[in-house]
Length: 112
Length: 115
Image (tube, rainbow over all chains, first blue to last red):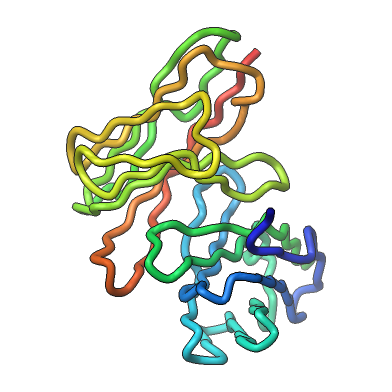
């Protein structure tokens, strides 16, 4: 049973466009939702994270939108750049747990 | 700080061989994790540790063992390697007191092939 469902599997956007990656979850006990960015040959690195008491968090060109009632959260990358080309993973943590569950990842390609 | 370091970077094993993947962190983190990453499957938790001397199974522990004798080191042992263990292995760490969860820092990974 996949606890966090991520879509799309791959995404191609043009430079300057908006990239949107979506994740859905079932467990209402999740209390922490991070997004990780992974470049080829590297380990994942935290990009941005949100807790369910807010509906949106923005850091530079990256925004998480969180819809608690729909049990969905998404990553928006504004003004996408070729340097943003990477694989993005959403994740979630259950309240009281010290473990993350990850989505399957989205490979983003930004064409120049 | 070097962060999380992993050795080796690459390894080819024959079926039935054993090996230890090394992981060290210098951030004084109490929690450490081992994940495997297979194409299109995300990251699956193998084992984790909440502190020296304490380890617990994750989602996919079969075929692996861990130990945590110090805060800094968290080696992953593969006994009797099988082709199904061909994967990229990541070690991660974080500092968590049970109040607010923080970022997991990942190592650069070990690419393992079992033939």
